[in-house]
Image 1 (cartoon, rainbow, N blue to C red):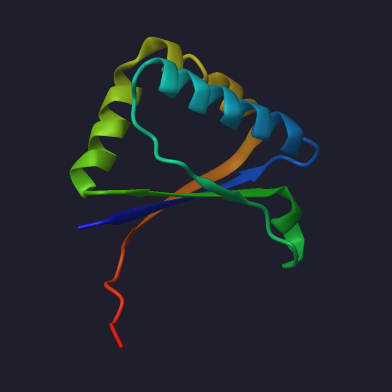
Image 2 (cartoon, rainbow, N blue to C red; image 1 turned 180 degrees about the vertical axis):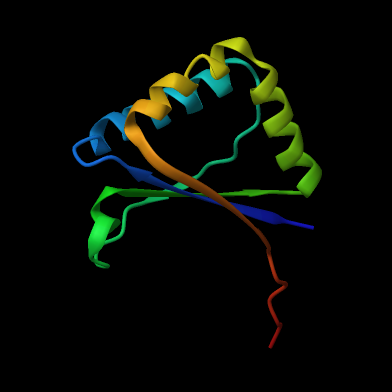
Length: 108
């Protein structure tokens, strides 16, 4: 069963560039450590008002829920990755994770 993870990260005003750099740093560190994070799509809302301009949305797709859990277990156990968390606290206002099942497409 394919699983799509969607992370919605709202940055403090003026911290968007720092948040994007921190995201890149975290992905590079995970790759270096051999922690699987599939190619992700990264978005920021074009319209939406309010704090939409301070929002980063990341979507990635895994082959299973077990693969997502493995990524979280390994990254949570890594001291270097966990060392980035105080940096996130300084730039991020909120963080929400959503998991979706990928629905099969109809043929025809």
